[in-house]
Image (cartoon, rainbow, N blue to C red; front, side, top):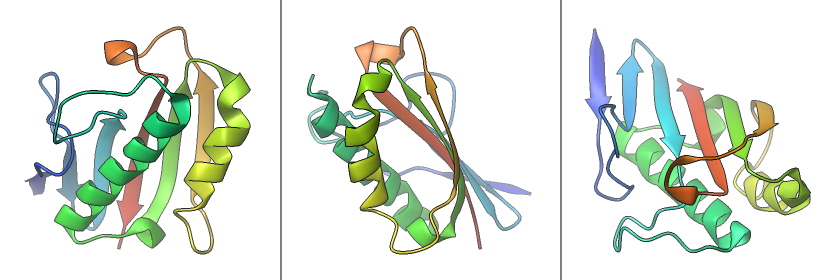
Length: 124
């Protein structure tokens, strides 16, 4: 049995997918972009996008009853690995201890011209 997670505190899906799904004790979240859910806009600055991505993740976690400590795996997509240090500073500030396993890839492009996208799996 699965449960769809949806919150207006994170951007709505821009295609035929859910923000996240809970199945058993696992939360599977779709990739999050740095879109401000209030305005529907995305700042062009990498650091601002990365911070907004993490805030969008926080909103989904909260809606599902999870928190950052429950995240076991993330996959990060960036359009320029030159932003890796900045990404690590912002990303790392959201994990108090024992950060999740992670992959990070440079990609040719992301939806809506985003510079960073993060998907995750959390488990209780």
